[in-house]
Amino acid sequence: MKNALGQPQSLLLLGGSSEIGLATARRLVRERTRRVHLAGRPSPALTAAADELTALGAEVTVHDFDAAAVDTHEPVLGKVFADGDIDVVLLAFGVLGDQRRDERDPLAAAAVVQVNYTGAVTAALVSAQALRQQGHGSLVVLSSVAGERARRANFIYGSTKAGLDAFAQGLGDSLQGTGVHVMVVRPGFVRGRMTEGLPEAPMATTPDAVAEALLAGLRRGSDTVWAPGALRIVMSGLRHLPRPLFRRLPV
Image 1 (cartoon, rainbow, N blue to C red):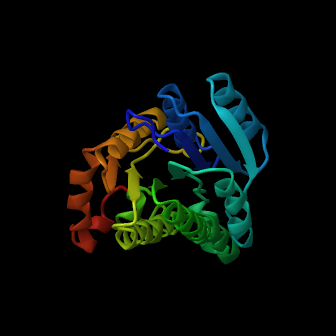
Image 2: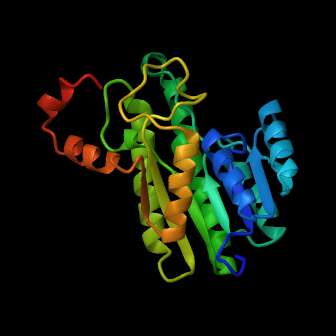
């Protein structure tokens, strides 16, 4: 449960080595979050994340979690929630894929969809059901501005985020009155491992900046957070731009 200052005491990070997820976890631990569950595939990065958060003073538990193995989500996450209430679940896993390769290889495209959408849906539903049973908690879903309108350069990835975004909004509406809050976070281009080597987009941001916006949104009880906030205006314009004009943009 949250402490007297309204600060969450426990975090479940789905995508335990996510840069945005870890930036958020660091801030929460410094603000007195005491228990952190890191769920991800075993890797040196996941081990390093656990060591770092432990050094900051958190009690850290690592769970073997594969976003693509949807049949394992219920038993794995069930064990996490059986260990005690969770105040915040942050769904932060995802893959960018390779647009050119994935267009030529439908199975590679399907693998992107399996992680970014199918895996996210099952993990979110399992988490939402557990949060509902405990009667409180927040589910934060990392979406992307890429889901606002499909672009030629990354429409496979963008389509998965569009589906996830719509799903998360609907899930949030379905949980009204249960004590469970769902918040969608829509970052722009984030400088990090996933985008390393790609041309930088306008209004690029960082994992730390997204984490700050995410936590500010949680404190406000927001349904949707844009990072940076000005992207909301930009994407509103792009969303309504006629397709013949949109196709001519260098995006």
